[in-house]
Image (cartoon, rainbow, N blue to C red; front, side, top):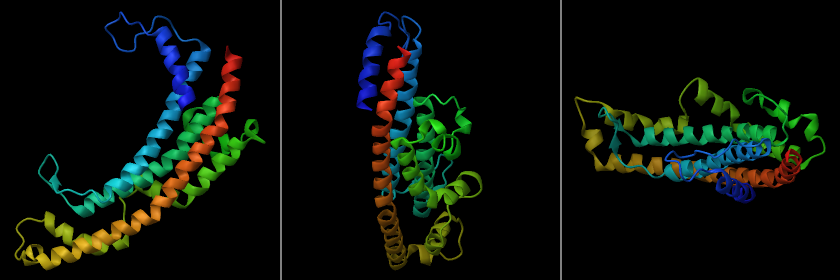
Amino acid sequence: MRTLAYMAAVLLRETIDSTSPRIGHFTRPFTLQEEYLRECLILAGEISAACDQLHYALAYLSGYRSRKTLNGELITRADHIAYQMENLYLRLGMIPDRSYRLTNEIFRLGLPARECGSRTVTDNEHLRGTTVRTRLRAIDKIVKPHREARNKIAHLARYNDPELTKVEAFFILQKSEGLPDESVLESERYRYLYKRDTDAYVEIKRKEFEPKVNCLIDEVAYLFEALLPHFKRVHATLK
């Protein structure tokens, strides 16, 4: 990222029109080499952003504050936890997908974005014998156990965990209006018990996913290191 950012900064100094009132107005079209640099920087940045967002999702699991939606509906702690777990699963799935796209661009495989996958990129003959193939497979191995849950969240249903469901009923009652008996909700004892159980649930999930997230981000770093020589080689040939 430092290498690409430095090269991009040089490019911007050479091409941005400082006299134009419009942001991003360039004095000339990019060359093929410069366009290659721009695309690689953007795609690498998308992977870095997903890595940051994995850390955000873990941090926000325990960051609940009572608040409501724009139409006045209460966002309960169970809603908050489910939302952040969905964030976590979705961003886990983003890492390999975006890694395939970056690899496709760096090696100039010419695949459309929607066709960049393990079979088409990792097993591509142009990656044969490279460390990049090993790194892509390592990333996929970490994410694979969570891919089914990620796909379910993305395409079928919301995050659903029986352990969270055990305490969810209390929070569903918090959303209900006109209950005949609200003594359960008003009892400090019940509030304490459900807060204790949700705190325990969050702690379990953080301990479960934090090592996996850290390991995945380490593998992204190794992938970037493996890709850099190939980027430099292709960049030089485009000159």
